[in-house]
Image (cartoon, rainbow over all chains, first blue to last red; front, side):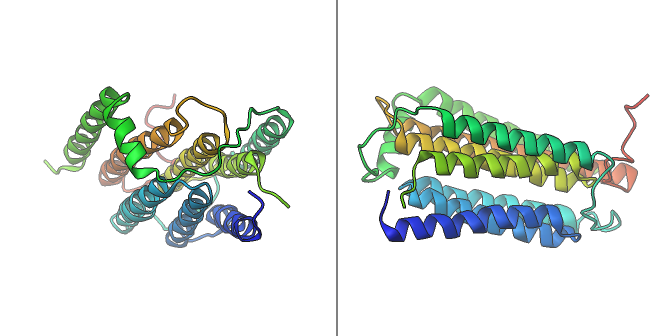
Length: 163
Length: 104
């Protein structure tokens, strides 16, 4: 991928995604943190599009930037007296060291390994290919995923029900 | 200047580390949940990047796996936020330093 447009889009989207993820950790107000999290999700969706994964990008916007962000906003709104504080706990220093170690380790491994990179180019269309893969080799995980979703929905309703 | 697999993997590593920091360091339960979602997102990014670049018999499998991860993340977010609501109803707080019923 060396078209100048794609390279520019990659860097802009990377700065958006990683920068707003850093802002999630930095801002003090939890509502602002959720809004920066949405921005980070949208940046990752753009990175999916540069990888020619259009269906996954749409699902990312629908589920992450839409549903999960709204769920988090609801949870913050419904817990009014628990201060909207996004502060750090007592373990922030070891957490920072551990996060830095993880980032450097994975980055070193990713850049030093000789990956078997293919030259087949971008995918033509992914939605129909994903649909066929879900109904032919992955039909059992597909059905189990629907059962998981139903179980999670019923479980969530039972947990929050007043009685 | 060209963009390859390693670029995406390093971006995924950075997002994963930020999510790990959030999940370990934040006091608020919803902040911890945001860190977990960021970590799942980073893993999804690496999966889709591998499915685009790596030699494989069925290269679309990486994207199918990413769709499954998004499904499980949605279920996990629903259950976790329901737990947050239930804890808030009983304890009037979602500060993880003050939810210490199981600590001896």
